[in-house]
Length: 442
Figure 1: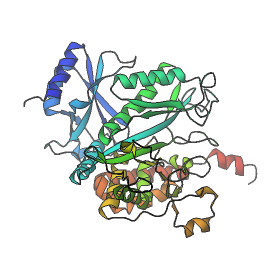
Figure 2 (figure 1 turned 180 degrees about the vertical axis):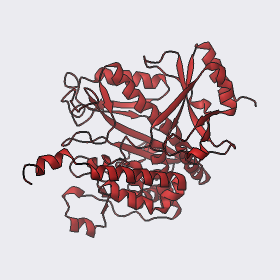
Figure 3 (figure 1 turned 90 degrees about the vertical axis):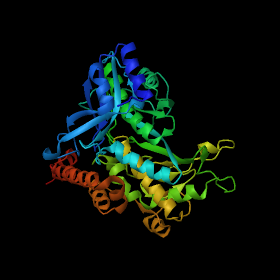
Figure 4 (figure 1 turned 120 degrees about the vertical axis):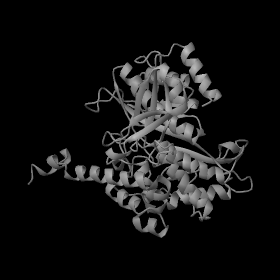
């Protein structure tokens, strides 16, 4: 088989830079990064034919009797890993195939690619820009803060400046451009925003970002976590996701004649996100702990509505700046950084495209603070709410035609089954809250 120019570049770079090991990366259904390493001698064969592995132990992949899988590296994702624990090591993201050469339907990367192909058939390219928040703690055994800084605070309140600087240096050395870096609202909470990119590149970048943040923390002798709500009483960590569709070089969300500069396509896309928001939640917020963040009062959205300035809304449309037509976008504020980015981006896109294809009508903008409205006022305004806990989210997802079409039977059924097991384990656990509240009384 003839090698592509990209594959030839990978082989040449490995030889010129003295790379000793190449890590082949892929992602399981729950969003955990998986890897095995090969030597340079095996690389050409991997690029042409892929590398076989046992998929039966990978979450959501295969049963024992169907365990053979093939990981085929995508040469466009080649990067040398910069962190100190791995010298002369490079990585490649892989697509997963069945032994007969067909794409494996439970590979999250393939799930996203399938939706991107669907968007392309409609003439669209999907771009996203996620804002991932996370915490630094002293170690993984507790939640001892490293600082008591707040939003945008600088040293000496923010002791993690060097952590973030090294993280950005590593990311940019791997070709991942960074837009913003700052301290977040909660003590010891931080945010690094990645620059807008197409959704597949961005999903790969999110996986790289999460590992890089943790590698840097380890280098400094601290612990980083993307757990959505590790500390009660302070803001949790979100992954607000900015997104837009382009038709060639033209932003399909922009309309100069609309009072909000939002096109019919953009309005229908938002309507799709809002109509299917409850169904998406199991994918964008997949852990028991995710729902501790989705409560009123901590900047996390709870109510299903859209607005321009109103940050209590689920979907926000950032204000238009003259001359910045390409920046017209929407911001979906419920996802958290512990989701599987491939599945999350795929489901957001599917919901938006459903709105466009079926010409959903966008409800009126929510101009009031939704948290201050009574339940009757919200009901009168047609404002529904996200699922209150994982159990509710599972039931909604299990009945969702949109998720079944987007994820496929294999992924959705595994996700529902796995999350039911998680809920059952959580439901049976006696928490410190119960002991503190009831043991002295009952």
